[in-house]
Every structure is written in structure tokens, then in C-alpha cells.
Image (cartoon, rainbow, N blue to C red; front, side, top):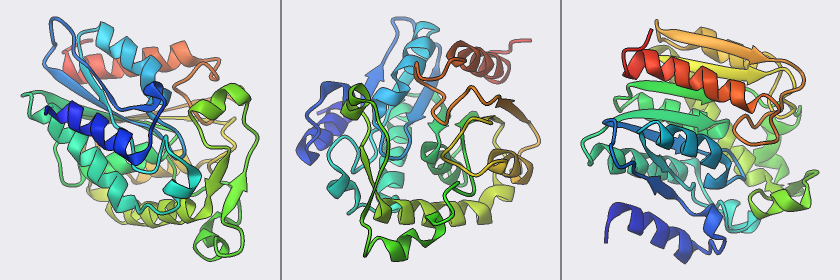
Length: 265
């Protein structure tokens, strides 16, 4: 069984029954030698990263999108997971690409960005692209999720019916508690991470605290780093058609990676 077959088998045994929510690997006919590790956000699935994956694949990059444990199954399943299990899945994704002899770049959305930062503390990445990363969530009760989940186990949010195939309508507060554990760890190691990084944020983001992406950018130890913030018309998730500036996101990522990976000007 190959590494990607193992990842798909794990997902199916965990209960993922929507083909579009499985982890996936895209290998071009003429690989560039660069591997791109894509990590989706909290309560999402690899489907969230598919548009970007297809774009990078068309340029010759080998792309692997991980599935974080507890995602694509049920909110109750996610409520049982610890962030260390998410990290293990991202680590396996890194090894899947590295074992192919590829250099590895990480692209993460939201919580996926924090997981990549954690891995970059111990693994070599050629570059990082951090989409809507954060050090603080917007909801004022989020820091107390570890206590509140005992009385209010889930938070229900507005979600279009077509999106409920790929995202959870209910977010487990126990999962938010795991995010809190993760972001506190990231705060302590940010200055020691020196990987070249592009950070994209949006003023229309209603999930993370205003300005938190810029704070993370300022604290990041990389000398080679870029920050771009979109306006109020852009939401938290930057990688799907819900973002009216999706093509600009693609262009910024492509230009950043071209300079770091392919000698572009």
C-alpha cells in the first residue's frame, strides 16, 4: 500500500464517505521537483484546498492535501481529537512529499497555517504561505472554550446547504479548545521560525480577531516575509469561490513561490 493509499484508507476507516473530502495527491506528468503540502482549516476538509491544488498542479508542482483527523466525519468525532493528532497528519503529509525526493512548501488555511508553523519549527520548508492565520479568535468567549464545552458542547453557525457537504454546521467547543492550545504554542515559537513566508489576511474576516494576522507577521522570525491584507469584501476562507478575490490570491501565491522556488523575478 502506498502512502497516499494509506491516508485514504485511514480517512475511510474514520468514516469519511464523501469522495471530495478525502486527502488527495496530484502528480504532474513532468514534475517541477517542488512538493506543495496543503492543509485545510478547522471543520473543513481537503475540498477547501482543491481550487488552489489544481492551479499549482497545472504549473508542474506535486500537490498533496492532507485531511486532519475529525474532519469530513462528524462534529462529535472532531470533539474527541487533540491538536497533536492534527500535527501527526500534517507530518505524514510532509514525509509523503519528502520521500518522493521533493522540496516541500507548505500552504495552510487558518488553523492549517498554524499547524504548518508548528511543523516548520522542526522541519525544513522552502517556503510557507499562511492564509488567514491568527493568534487570537474573534469571539470574546473563544479563550474559555475549554471550560464552556461542558455546558455548550457545540456552536451552530450559518452555513449554506451546499457547503454542509464540506464543512460542519456545528463546531465543537472542545475543538476550539485544541486551537487555543495550538495558538499558545505558536506564540512561543514564532520568533524562532525563519522560513520565507507569505501571509494573506482580510478585513472581512469574521472568524479571527482584527489585526491578528499582522501581529503574527510582525512576530515571525523570518527575514524574508511578505504581508498582504484584502478589504472588507473578502471573507475568512481565501481558497474557495466564496472569495470574490480568489484569482488575486492565486496570483499573489504564484508570484511569491516563483521568486523563492523557481528563480523568478
